[in-house]
Amino acid sequence: MSSPRSLFSPAPKALVFDLMGTCTDWKSSVLPSLNSAPALPALPPEGLPQLAANWRAGFFTEIHSRFQAKQAAEDIDVIHRRVLDQLLEDSGVGLQEWDEGVRTELVGSWHTQTAWPDALHALARLKEKFLVVVLANGTTRLQLDVVKSSGLPFHALFSSQLLGLTKPDPEIYLKALDLLQLNPSECVMVAAHAYDLAGAKSTGMKTVYVQRPTEDLDLDNKRVRGDVDLFIDGTDGKKDGGLGELAEILGA
Image 1: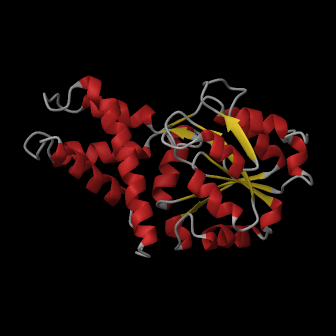
Image 2 (image 1 turned 90 degrees about the horizontal axis):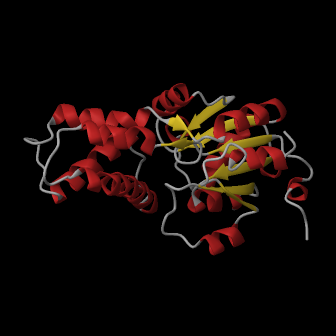
């Protein structure tokens, strides 16, 4: 049986990362923001983690629906606000209870995130040996804010806004690699989302799935393992897990 390191021989020249959920824990900012909003009987504190999870799931439903319908990508802030408004309406919460200011602050909480415990040190190690870049759906400003708040040390950020395409369109991966002047066979896509890795794999990129406690909660991990080149458990919160394990495998 081949070792994990032999999967990446010859060694890649670039590692392409998804950002939110893969490298950062979005709940670290979104859940406290929800808890700091005015208390309401319709939204008890014990129900806010589920509201946060539904908000995240609703975001993915929106971007996948727009992608399938071949509609233009939207600003993620706009999507987050629309999904939030619908969730609050479904819970009987109107603008009288959570007004414009509260909702704007909640949407803004997605711009401030904390890196997963394994991410900062691992990326610093990987950066010494490979190009490490972000390729993620969203705006460049969102990426800048997330990277600034988390301290993640990437060489470059490629947003769907910047490239004019949306993951998992194969063309967005190819366009990013063209800017790097690299071939798909020279690059690895790293993400906590199976749909993202399926898009990357279709171009010829190697794929690494990093399991996170906030992402792909409804997927069959056994099936995911069979679809990617490498599956890494990044759910235990240890620095040597997740991206730390990837750095070790790649000899960084």
